[in-house]
Figure 1 (tube, rainbow, N blue to C red):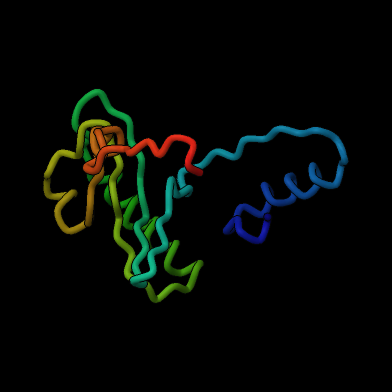
Figure 2 (figure 1 turned 90 degrees about the vertical axis):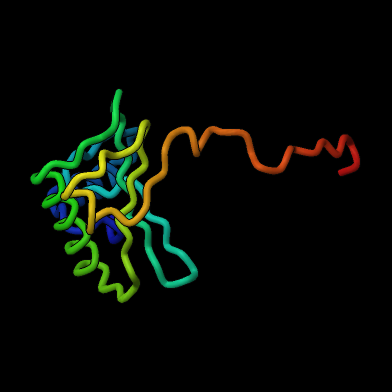
Length: 129
C-alpha cells in the first residue's frame, strides 16, 4: 500500500507502524496534494478529476488554477506517464467559465449528470437469472 503513496514519507512511516502493531487503527491523511479521482482510460488518456461542492457555480481563481496546474505537473513527474492528462471538474452546479477555466479544464461533470435517469430504461428480467 505505501508504495502507491507518492512522497509523504512521515505518513508512510506512521502507516507502516500501525499496520505492524497488530491493533485496530484509524488514521486520516489530509493534504492539498491529493487527487480526488483518476480515470486511467484505454485510449492512453487520464482524467485527473477534482470534486468540488458549492452552493453555486464553482469559481476557479488564480491560486486554485496554479495549484491544479502544479498537481498535474507533479502527477506527471511522479508517475512518469506519457499519457494525455485531462483536468476534469466534478461539481454540484458547474464551474464558472473564466480566464482560469479556459485552457486548464478539459471536461466537466455536474451532479445532475451523475444522478439523472439513464438514457435506456432498466429492464427487469425477473427471475430468469
